[in-house]
Each structure stands twice: as structure tokens, then as C-alpha cells.
Amino acid sequence: MTEVQKRLKYHEQADVMVVEFKDSKILDETVIQEVGNELFGLVDKQFRPKMLLDFTNVDYLSSAALGKLITLHKRVREKKGQLRFCAIKPKIYDVFRITKLDKIFEIHENQEKALADF
Image (cartoon, rainbow, N blue to C red; front, side):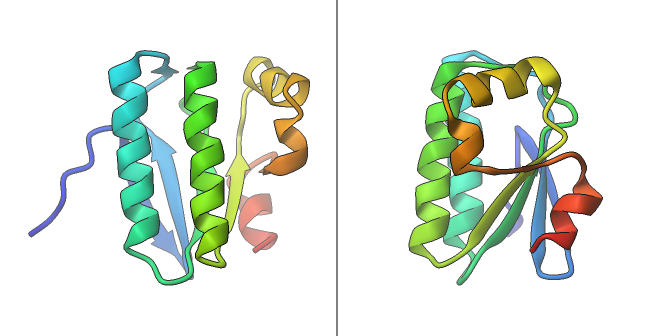
């Protein structure tokens, strides 16, 4: 049975799961919960996940969504996996910088550079 992803679209490129967000605004608690559940589900299905989150479509991201990303980062590390982010718009990147999350997450300019870093 195929699981329907409401908030994400993803594909494998080499051994990396490339995940793109469908929503431009990840602000609403319901959306954040669904995004988190889908991301956690993808990690749980993989033995040693390599995951790239592509933020190309995301214009707004709440602080609650950042909490989900921190939890995702911990889960990936627990499974000895790797997590990268790419294509974060400047105003969202500023939030990562101010909260020092740019020191925790590996953030790349685009998908190509991020994939080359795995």
C-alpha cells in the first residue's frame, strides 16, 4: 500500500532522500504536525537515512516548525544518518542564523551542492 504524502514530495537520488515541501507557509500547527509526521515516517523507514530537505517552495516558517526540524535532526543522528538543508530563502535563513541553528544544520545554497556534500 502506498502512503499518501500530504505536505511533502520526495524522491531518491543515488542513496539520498530528497524532500521538497509542498506548502509555501509552514505556520499553522496542523501543517507543522503533518510535516513533522511525514518527515519522521521517512526517517523511520530507512536504516541509515541520508536526507536532503529542499526549502525552495517555503516562504514562511514558524518557530514551532524549527522545533520539528531539531527533532528530525536528532532522529537522523540516532540512526547514524545525515541531514542537509538547501535553498533556504534569506529571510528564513536569518532566523536560522539568529537562533544559531545555522551552526547545527548543514545548509547549502542549492540541491546540487548539498548532494555533493553527502
